[in-house]
Length: 277
Ligand SMILES: [Zn+2]
Image 1 (cartoon, rainbow, N blue to C red):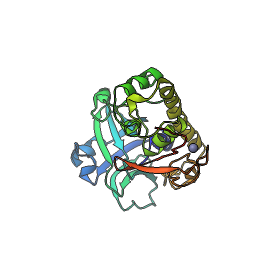
Image 2 (cartoon, rainbow, N blue to C red; image 1 turned 45 degrees about the vertical axis):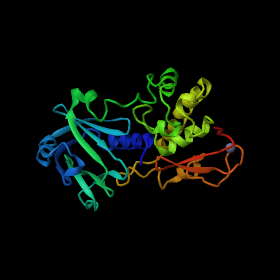
Image 3 (spheres, rainbow, N blue to C red; image 1 turned 60 degrees about the horizontal axis):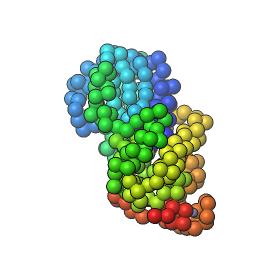
Image 4 (cartoon, protein in one colour; image 1 turned 180 degrees about the horizontal axis):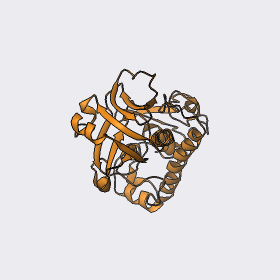
């Protein structure tokens, strides 16, 4: 599943590719993609709309349109946007399609069918149920050391699971949660409320570091309209993780073998020497 840096890069790619464009028409081919919107309403909403801005909140992609509407999208496991020229055919699992004013098409395809869309009034975006409980953006001043210390103290959950809760910390997924815990030397099974202030501060810095390092890495990559989502996974970055997907390989700090455990049906990777319980 894409995490915050990957979604941010998709947003930047889309914003660049669709700058100044308008949508002539839109079609919803798989109704369950947008459970709150009928295909007819979907069509009406995207009839002759300008794309004003493409932004992100958490892992949601937001398309602000003329007429006061915003499309909220979540890629989930395998949702993919592509900007296709007329000569390109739609991919196999095309669930929504938008015809642009230059005859190109913005297409959303999703092999695993977990993707999500909704349409809301732009001036009520802050109240949208998809967004209104999300924790502060990690790069905003609201995501401060005191904020993180406070939410950690209020939870008995294991820290790795805590970090995946988007209402507590926004934007981390399975990869960056493991990476941030490794950098701050916190064991993934540690109860959140038992993390010391020093380690909480270290964790705060590590969360920002793993996300911004990843964004910096992606910033230099070329934008491919046919492959907006695959600049990380399957790309060069996989060899660079500290612990993620490195079970049995030596810790980059102490050379002890990296361990993998299952937490909430997902793998956590850590070094049992550097990250004591
Ligand atoms: Zn180690």
